[in-house]
Length: 251
Figure 1 (tube, rainbow, N blue to C red):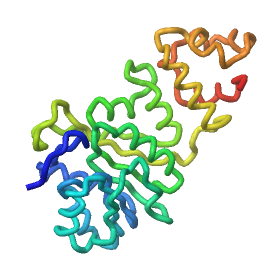
Figure 2 (cartoon, rainbow, N blue to C red; figure 1 turned 180 degrees about the vertical axis):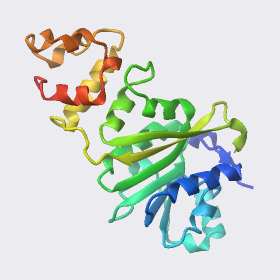
Figure 3 (cartoon, rainbow, N blue to C red; figure 1 turned 90 degrees about the vertical axis):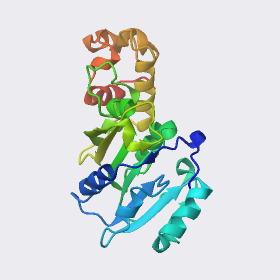
Protein backbone atom coordinates (compact mmCIF):
# COMPACT_ATOMS: atom_id res chain seq x y z
CA UNK A 1 0.00 0.00 0.00
CA UNK A 2 1.53 3.30 -1.09
CA UNK A 3 1.66 6.17 1.37
CA UNK A 4 -0.08 9.37 0.37
CA UNK A 5 2.07 12.42 1.06
CA UNK A 6 0.06 15.62 1.20
CA UNK A 7 3.27 17.67 1.41
CA UNK A 8 4.00 16.55 -2.17
CA UNK A 9 0.48 17.28 -3.39
CA UNK A 10 -0.18 13.61 -4.09
CA UNK A 11 -3.56 12.34 -5.30
CA UNK A 12 -3.53 8.96 -7.01
CA UNK A 13 -5.35 8.75 -10.33
CA UNK A 14 -7.64 5.70 -10.27
CA UNK A 15 -9.87 6.30 -13.29
CA UNK A 16 -8.45 4.14 -16.06
CA UNK A 17 -10.41 5.98 -18.74
CA UNK A 18 -8.55 9.23 -17.94
CA UNK A 19 -5.17 7.54 -18.32
CA UNK A 20 -6.21 5.94 -21.61
CA UNK A 21 -7.52 9.24 -22.93
CA UNK A 22 -4.24 11.01 -22.16
CA UNK A 23 -2.30 8.25 -23.92
CA UNK A 24 -4.58 8.46 -26.97
CA UNK A 25 -3.93 12.20 -27.19
CA UNK A 26 -0.18 11.65 -26.83
CA UNK A 27 -0.25 9.31 -29.80
CA UNK A 28 -1.82 11.93 -32.06
CA UNK A 29 1.67 13.30 -32.69
CA UNK A 30 4.99 11.62 -33.48
CA UNK A 31 6.48 10.29 -30.24
CA UNK A 32 10.04 9.12 -29.69
CA UNK A 33 11.30 10.47 -26.37
CA UNK A 34 8.87 10.88 -23.48
CA UNK A 35 9.28 12.19 -19.96
CA UNK A 36 6.61 11.56 -17.33
CA UNK A 37 6.63 14.00 -14.43
CA UNK A 38 5.45 12.66 -11.07
CA UNK A 39 4.43 9.09 -12.00
CA UNK A 40 3.51 8.32 -8.38
CA UNK A 41 1.60 5.05 -8.28
CA UNK A 42 2.06 4.40 -12.00
CA UNK A 43 -1.55 4.95 -13.15
CA UNK A 44 -0.33 6.56 -16.36
CA UNK A 45 3.07 4.86 -16.45
CA UNK A 46 1.58 1.40 -17.01
CA UNK A 47 0.20 2.63 -20.34
CA UNK A 48 3.25 4.66 -21.31
CA UNK A 49 5.67 1.72 -20.96
CA UNK A 50 3.65 -0.15 -23.59
CA UNK A 51 4.03 2.51 -26.26
CA UNK A 52 6.10 1.00 -29.07
CA UNK A 53 9.42 2.61 -30.00
CA UNK A 54 9.23 5.20 -27.23
CA UNK A 55 12.11 5.98 -24.87
CA UNK A 56 10.41 6.71 -21.53
CA UNK A 57 11.97 8.44 -18.55
CA UNK A 58 10.16 9.22 -15.31
CA UNK A 59 11.02 11.89 -12.75
CA UNK A 60 9.81 11.20 -9.22
CA UNK A 61 10.87 12.94 -5.99
CA UNK A 62 9.33 10.43 -3.55
CA UNK A 63 11.74 7.59 -2.70
CA UNK A 64 8.91 5.20 -1.79
CA UNK A 65 7.32 5.72 -5.20
CA UNK A 66 10.69 5.29 -6.96
CA UNK A 67 11.12 1.88 -5.32
CA UNK A 68 7.55 0.92 -6.19
CA UNK A 69 7.96 1.96 -9.83
CA UNK A 70 11.29 0.16 -10.15
CA UNK A 71 9.78 -3.05 -8.81
CA UNK A 72 6.58 -2.74 -10.85
CA UNK A 73 8.22 -1.72 -14.13
CA UNK A 74 11.67 -3.37 -14.18
CA UNK A 75 12.15 -2.21 -17.77
CA UNK A 76 12.38 1.33 -16.37
CA UNK A 77 15.12 0.50 -13.86
CA UNK A 78 17.67 2.90 -15.35
CA UNK A 79 15.14 5.43 -16.57
CA UNK A 80 13.56 6.52 -13.29
CA UNK A 81 15.15 9.75 -12.13
CA UNK A 82 14.87 10.22 -8.37
CA UNK A 83 14.89 14.02 -8.23
CA UNK A 84 12.94 17.23 -7.85
CA UNK A 85 11.63 18.23 -11.28
CA UNK A 86 12.29 21.88 -10.48
CA UNK A 87 16.00 21.14 -10.01
CA UNK A 88 16.40 18.60 -12.80
CA UNK A 89 18.53 19.09 -15.89
CA UNK A 90 16.96 18.50 -19.28
CA UNK A 91 16.49 14.69 -19.47
CA UNK A 92 17.13 14.11 -23.19
CA UNK A 93 19.68 15.41 -25.68
CA UNK A 94 17.04 15.15 -28.42
CA UNK A 95 13.55 16.68 -28.66
CA UNK A 96 11.06 15.12 -26.25
CA UNK A 97 7.45 15.13 -25.10
CA UNK A 98 6.26 15.71 -21.52
CA UNK A 99 3.27 14.09 -19.86
CA UNK A 100 1.99 13.81 -16.34
CA UNK A 101 -0.53 14.27 -13.60
CA UNK A 102 1.39 17.14 -12.07
CA UNK A 103 1.60 17.77 -8.31
CA UNK A 104 -0.82 20.65 -7.89
CA UNK A 105 1.29 22.50 -5.33
CA UNK A 106 4.09 23.10 -7.86
CA UNK A 107 2.26 22.82 -11.19
CA UNK A 108 2.76 26.46 -12.20
CA UNK A 109 6.47 26.17 -11.41
CA UNK A 110 6.61 23.05 -13.59
CA UNK A 111 5.14 25.07 -16.47
CA UNK A 112 7.92 27.63 -16.12
CA UNK A 113 10.45 24.80 -16.08
CA UNK A 114 8.96 23.61 -19.38
CA UNK A 115 9.39 27.15 -20.71
CA UNK A 116 13.10 26.88 -19.90
CA UNK A 117 13.27 23.66 -21.91
CA UNK A 118 11.05 24.85 -24.74
CA UNK A 119 13.70 24.50 -27.46
CA UNK A 120 13.56 20.73 -26.95
CA UNK A 121 9.94 20.21 -25.89
CA UNK A 122 7.76 18.97 -28.76
CA UNK A 123 4.51 18.72 -26.81
CA UNK A 124 3.31 18.82 -23.21
CA UNK A 125 0.14 17.10 -22.08
CA UNK A 126 -0.50 17.59 -18.39
CA UNK A 127 -3.21 17.43 -15.77
CA UNK A 128 -3.57 20.48 -13.55
CA UNK A 129 -5.96 21.88 -11.01
CA UNK A 130 -8.81 23.19 -13.17
CA UNK A 131 -8.24 26.84 -12.22
CA UNK A 132 -4.55 26.64 -13.13
CA UNK A 133 -5.33 24.98 -16.47
CA UNK A 134 -7.89 27.67 -17.24
CA UNK A 135 -5.42 30.40 -16.34
CA UNK A 136 -2.72 28.99 -18.63
CA UNK A 137 -5.21 28.79 -21.52
CA UNK A 138 -7.01 32.10 -20.84
CA UNK A 139 -7.22 34.76 -23.56
CA UNK A 140 -7.18 38.54 -23.26
CA UNK A 141 -10.35 40.01 -21.87
CA UNK A 142 -10.79 37.23 -19.33
CA UNK A 143 -10.57 38.04 -15.64
CA UNK A 144 -8.24 35.04 -15.16
CA UNK A 145 -5.90 36.09 -17.98
CA UNK A 146 -2.59 36.98 -16.36
CA UNK A 147 1.16 36.57 -16.11
CA UNK A 148 1.19 32.81 -16.72
CA UNK A 149 -1.21 33.13 -19.67
CA UNK A 150 0.96 35.69 -21.47
CA UNK A 151 4.36 34.15 -20.77
CA UNK A 152 3.26 30.65 -21.80
CA UNK A 153 1.32 31.78 -24.88
CA UNK A 154 4.28 33.84 -26.09
CA UNK A 155 5.97 30.54 -26.93
CA UNK A 156 3.28 27.83 -26.89
CA UNK A 157 -0.15 27.19 -28.31
CA UNK A 158 -2.39 26.06 -25.45
CA UNK A 159 -5.40 23.74 -25.85
CA UNK A 160 -7.83 23.11 -23.00
CA UNK A 161 -8.65 19.45 -23.67
CA UNK A 162 -10.98 18.02 -21.02
CA UNK A 163 -11.93 18.19 -17.36
CA UNK A 164 -11.54 15.46 -14.76
CA UNK A 165 -13.89 14.89 -11.83
CA UNK A 166 -12.64 14.74 -8.24
CA UNK A 167 -13.74 11.10 -7.97
CA UNK A 168 -11.15 10.06 -10.55
CA UNK A 169 -8.59 10.28 -7.73
CA UNK A 170 -7.90 8.65 -4.39
CA UNK A 171 -8.27 10.54 -2.19
CA UNK A 172 -10.54 12.94 -4.12
CA UNK A 173 -9.01 16.44 -4.19
CA UNK A 174 -11.17 19.38 -3.16
CA UNK A 175 -10.90 20.81 -6.67
CA UNK A 176 -11.68 19.68 -10.19
CA UNK A 177 -8.86 18.97 -12.61
CA UNK A 178 -8.27 19.58 -16.30
CA UNK A 179 -5.88 18.37 -18.98
CA UNK A 180 -4.21 20.78 -21.38
CA UNK A 181 -1.81 20.45 -24.29
CA UNK A 182 1.00 22.90 -24.94
CA UNK A 183 2.63 22.87 -28.38
CA UNK A 184 5.54 25.16 -29.34
CA UNK A 185 4.57 27.96 -31.71
CA UNK A 186 6.24 27.72 -35.10
CA UNK A 187 6.69 31.48 -34.94
CA UNK A 188 6.94 32.66 -31.32
CA UNK A 189 6.31 36.35 -30.73
CA UNK A 190 9.37 38.57 -31.14
CA UNK A 191 10.41 40.39 -27.98
CA UNK A 192 13.17 42.80 -27.03
CA UNK A 193 14.28 40.14 -24.54
CA UNK A 194 12.64 37.50 -22.39
CA UNK A 195 13.60 39.52 -19.34
CA UNK A 196 11.88 42.61 -20.74
CA UNK A 197 8.72 40.64 -21.44
CA UNK A 198 8.70 39.11 -17.95
CA UNK A 199 9.26 42.47 -16.24
CA UNK A 200 6.56 44.16 -18.32
CA UNK A 201 3.94 41.48 -17.82
CA UNK A 202 4.55 41.06 -14.09
CA UNK A 203 4.51 44.83 -13.55
CA UNK A 204 1.34 45.26 -15.58
CA UNK A 205 -0.61 42.54 -13.80
CA UNK A 206 0.70 43.44 -10.37
CA UNK A 207 -1.74 46.36 -10.47
CA UNK A 208 -4.26 44.93 -12.91
CA UNK A 209 -7.08 47.25 -11.78
CA UNK A 210 -5.09 50.27 -12.90
CA UNK A 211 -4.60 51.44 -16.47
CA UNK A 212 -1.28 50.50 -18.00
CA UNK A 213 -0.28 54.15 -17.87
CA UNK A 214 -0.31 54.01 -14.08
CA UNK A 215 0.77 50.40 -13.66
CA UNK A 216 3.90 50.43 -15.87
CA UNK A 217 4.84 54.12 -15.90
CA UNK A 218 8.30 53.32 -14.50
CA UNK A 219 9.12 51.28 -17.61
CA UNK A 220 8.35 53.86 -20.31
CA UNK A 221 9.18 57.48 -21.10
CA UNK A 222 6.52 60.17 -20.69
CA UNK A 223 6.24 60.47 -24.48
CA UNK A 224 5.61 56.74 -24.92
CA UNK A 225 2.94 56.82 -22.21
CA UNK A 226 0.86 59.24 -24.31
CA UNK A 227 -0.06 56.36 -26.65
CA UNK A 228 -3.72 55.32 -26.36
CA UNK A 229 -2.76 51.71 -25.67
CA UNK A 230 -1.79 52.81 -22.15
CA UNK A 231 -5.44 53.70 -21.48
CA UNK A 232 -6.14 49.97 -21.33
CA UNK A 233 -5.75 47.59 -18.44
CA UNK A 234 -3.33 44.67 -18.62
CA UNK A 235 -6.03 42.04 -19.17
CA UNK A 236 -7.15 43.80 -22.37
CA UNK A 237 -3.80 43.41 -24.15
CA UNK A 238 -3.06 40.45 -26.39
CA UNK A 239 0.16 38.48 -26.15
CA UNK A 240 1.33 40.18 -29.37
CA UNK A 241 0.66 43.65 -27.93
CA UNK A 242 2.71 42.87 -24.84
CA UNK A 243 5.52 41.60 -27.06
CA UNK A 244 5.42 44.73 -29.21
CA UNK A 245 5.56 46.97 -26.14
CA UNK A 246 8.84 45.42 -24.98
CA UNK A 247 10.64 47.21 -27.81
CA UNK A 248 9.40 50.55 -26.48
CA UNK A 249 10.52 50.07 -22.88
CA UNK A 250 13.16 52.39 -21.47
CA UNK A 251 15.15 49.56 -19.94
